Amino acid sequence: MLAGLILGILAGVLLHALVPGHVGKIDHYVLSPIGQAFIRVIQFIVVPVVFTSLIIGLTSLQGTGKIGSYTAKLLPLYIITSSIALAIGMLMAAVLKPGTGISLSKMAEAPDKTQKSQSLVDWLVGIVPTNPFEALSTANLLQVIISAVLIGAAMNLVKEKAKPFRALVESVYAIVEKILQIILKVAPIGVFALIASVIASQGFGIVKKLLLYVVGLIAAIIVMTVIYYLFLLIVGAKPNHFFKSFFPSFSLAFGTASSNAALPVSMDNAKSHYGMRQEITSFALPFGTAVKRDGAAILQGFNALFIAQFFDVPITASLITSVFISALLVSFSTAGVPGAGIIMMTTVLSAAGLPLEGIAIVAGVDRLTDGFRTALNVIGSTANAAVINRWDKNKKTGG
Image 1: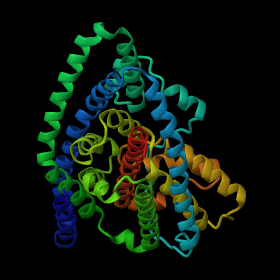
Image 2 (image 1 turned 180 degrees about the vertical axis):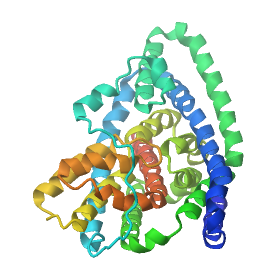
Image 3 (image 1 turned 30 degrees about the horizontal axis):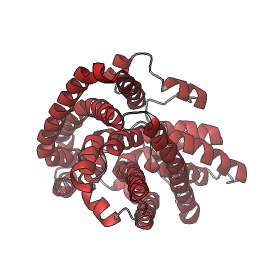
């Protein structure tokens, strides 16, 4: 996958430089269809992997006590680490001041689709499923998780009568695992097509004008990655082994810019390479993929201050507070699909009273930085799961 990523970047640069007049057709008929087909086939197994693995993990716990225990441990970790990521993004923007002195003769068009602001109460009510089949068919991961938790808890209560259904779930999981192995064999081709499409069609023209913006955003992501490395080191979760084990899922997240697409690979890496306990893998990774977005937190905080600088809006304590609170909430409700961060910017900018026109400025380079943010999202969800895994081992061994 790493080779596919590097070759895709090189191919995109060459196409943009040598045959700019033919890039549109090559992208439309070759690169984009291959890349989109790859994302679709990955998404094909996301819901069955989450649903079946979560039920298997929950029924192996023989009770619901550990579910509450894992949730009680994960949520504070998510809030703390997301707050750190958000603070790093805002601090980087405050120090580098990427929004000052920029003159763009041609601004990229803002996205056509904007998401209507949703209150926290509405969002919390919305994650409760009314129909488990609808949750599965619409790939609403939070609703799928809640459905699986309810079914798994009920299966633990009915015990023997649930054995036939558990056997069916285990059979489906085995089939999905085999499909994943097949998909991974063609993953380098999909990653190649996706990244080549972006580089070839967009080039680096707008990046030159927004160089400090791109550098600052990536620098903030690197800083947060280092913090995760140190966090894993402190708790004894073997950070070198962690990054080596999960590297395939981080590469896939970077290439596809989709946390959801990387989830099946993350779960496979956790089990096959890192040695994470099955029940933690089955619960913490899908849960983290659904709500944990460190990359989105950095994006929202960094972009809000960037836009304030661009439009010469005074950065006051109330503006910083509004950005921080709204960006933190938005980071937990951003979809794990490409481009979702830009769409969710409307909520943060509206809450802070910043011009929505600012979205148009960063839209052109969003896809070039989306891969970095998505990789951090996956690092965050897997690292927090690794910490819980380590704490559980220490508790059992008394270490």
